View 1 (cartoon, rainbow, N blue to C red):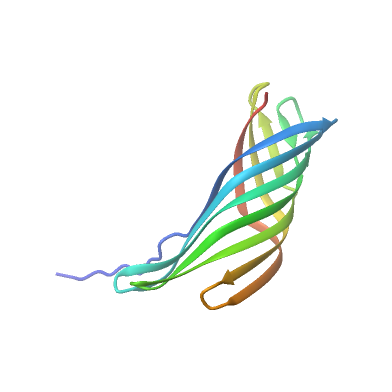
View 2: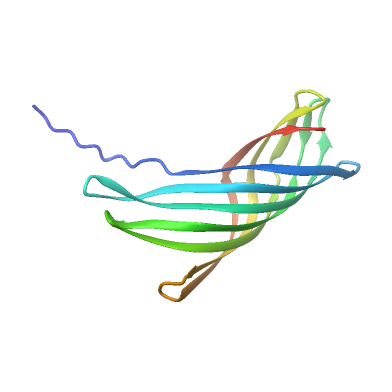
Length: 169
């Protein structure tokens, strides 16, 4: 017989679920505030036939403003400027029986230029957004070792897409 060994890496995952309350404040401008729960999973390396991983889970608040440009009766171009404030937990497997855990806090601002919304009826819409200019900063504090790590990043992110469903009341 033959022996086969897989060298593939499990897929990483990043998603969030949330809700937003928004109002049109004047012609074509919509102000909103969202509450969401982000989660990420990232496989790091294989150790004794098990994958060591890092995970994050948190809660976030997202104030934003969008401008609606009517393309036709159903399609709107909706660029958005927003802020992000997040608090969460980070854990990383160091070995089969050792895990590093800490808390993190972060904030950011973004400008999403590739955003569209399709009104499927007067009450419901589907939206798609891809790519944004982003600036974000994070602080990770480890009480056990009394250390702090602060990071900041500016990027043009076209690898992250989002699909949303809206109900208008």
